[in-house]
Image (cartoon, rainbow, N blue to C red; front, side):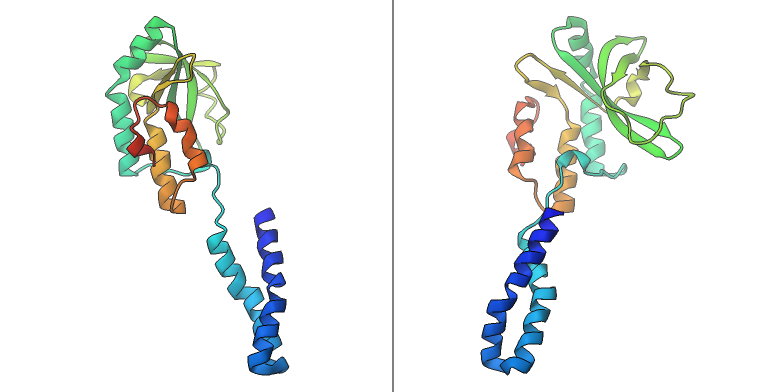
Length: 202
């Protein structure tokens, strides 16, 4: 909202210097409408190009069929034994990512992982899903999520260093596709991901 207001004010502020320049070449009858047209269309267009709005990276939408996202999920699943070891040791905070389905679609959420039992991870949701979950499938505070439904995992130590978290790369990739680049301030948190190479997080 502030960005749009700023673009509008700045564009119409440019009307006056534009009018004086155009008045010199085209006279008052043509100079004023041309300057007004510049302020209404041309200046807002170019200012918006320069003053680009970058939304938070955690709200970026990822296509479920995105090839790179599928590769990140496969990478995480191939290393689930590390999650199991971390849960057994109990020295690090553990999280898993999975899909919650509803009649409106599916939401990919993170949950706190407590243990791994009989091929499933015992999970408590960290945040509320966007869609209303199917009450026949999601009735308990703690749920059993089959390991084959796990899309990603993280193990975080007391210093904030994080193992796993590969789908964060898919978010970076999707953000680049949608907005051209990822602001550096959104990449800072990836420095603590020990399994992600610096070249992957640009």
